[in-house]
Length: 413
Ligand code: HGY
Ligand code: MN
Ligand code: MN
Image (cartoon, rainbow, N blue to C red):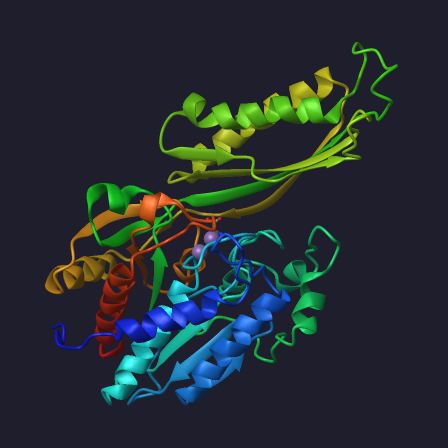
């Protein structure tokens, strides 16, 4: 039963988020806290300070993930966990990830000030590198913790400047002593902005995703032949950028060709030597394919991969492909998803049962324990941009649902 009178402190949640938004603030009103950057470190330090103020047991694992543990009456019982990520996209938003770390922090602050002790311990977490923008792929820390990714493979990943993940983790002082290895978890809740248009369009406050699409990431490298743009005839050129251009449009057409619920995007490209009067001879670009149906996504990849090989052959531009990362679609625990919908209703918030097109650490947590997410609307459906925004009253509503969900799970015997 929901202890209805218990509510989070909206003003405190709002000022906590505003405090965090100052770290890596960008001129356009967003944030830039790239994984393992100085800004990421600054925000981590502030989060650890707040955890210590609550007398939580703070642990940092070898992937840099930060855990704050609140004791329960019976600490032999598996904990309830809730968390998300502090890192952001380049020129990202003030809510993506951080809401899901500050939300559970606000929940623990509320439990403390109401002297509420739960049966089970509660652990809140900041997962390192959820975004996968500076260091690909995404969700690597929860992936290693869940046993789905190899720690040393992630350690060796490099950013565009050749900096290694592990070296940057050491540089900011967050390569912790705790092995990044899963432990029994009673249930995991991740609180997050929707990052899409559905809730706003349907006029709903709380989203309860039934799960997350699969995410498949690929890296494509093309070789061409550089030359002076003036004297070199058009016929016989091996222009790597033109080859890439044809391939990028093939990716864009893929969902329509395949049908079904799929998205396919080329988001990142590097072109060398990138001089206006040299024919490009090296191009790297990324491919992101997502669908609820993993096989559908794999078939799509096989189709477009054949297109790539034909284009590369036709233009005499040798191609190299890295199948960088795949995480299966994640159907959440139906009981926990229903709990989110029931609590929203009991608290008087409208709700929507939906699917998450955005990836989250919940994808990997779902491989370890019963998992569910709580969404609140993104104004204009915008995210991963500086104008990303969510109403404070919606942030409060989602945190109230999270509070009740954590309470219910943490008091299950
Ligand atoms: O790619 C995603 O959906 C997430 O932001 N990592
Ligand atoms: Mn996120
Ligand atoms: Mn994101």
